[in-house]
Length: 256
Ligand code: PGA
Image 1 (tube, helix red, strand yellow):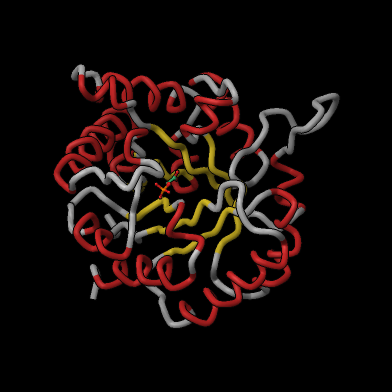
Image 2 (cartoon, protein in one colour):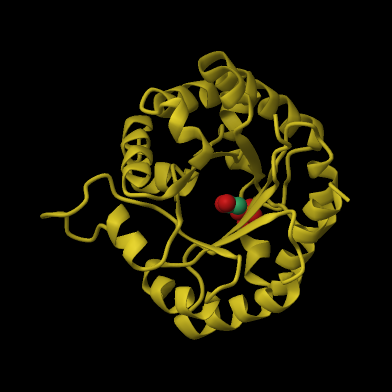
């Protein structure tokens, strides 16, 4: 099976005006133009997508949304659908981020429907899973991430998998500065990969699994050196071109 190409995505969350986002991607284009062995993406707020798509032009940097609704259109005030994201220039969407799960009622089944809708609309999808601190402390990490992943796997076929990325993001490590150790992350990544391969054999085992949670230039390389960590979903550090660029380069160095 071909080696898994690392994928590093910046989740900008609720940050950056259109102008700030355009400046940031311009800097990223300049910094990352020569990197070929890492897939790079950014996920700005919905209102910036179309402008940033134009600014990215023919750059290899992928554009994605931070969420994607499960219906294509209709009376759903405030939502944005997969076809509309494609129309705005997106090629992927993130679903199931822990902030969506915790604050906006995105249950495992809602996340599965969103993943299905994103794929049906022509997008790739990053499906986030992760345990809370309490779940980790009570030994329930694998049970929690296993349940989250299997809800989405129910709606996938093996043909979908080349457009699927899993992101393991322990809730206690997001925005806290407290990163999972490479060994802690690797243990969960290996568990998730086993679950993928039990359901979809070799194609399942080939799905990329990103780590997310306080990834910084200083810890990216160490995390990437683990066998089952295939890149990073980066929040805070993706807002600075220098930091995000350094994380991408750390992932690139793995293969050189
Ligand atoms: P962080 O966020 O890098 O700021 O911890 C990661 C994420 O929420 O995707």
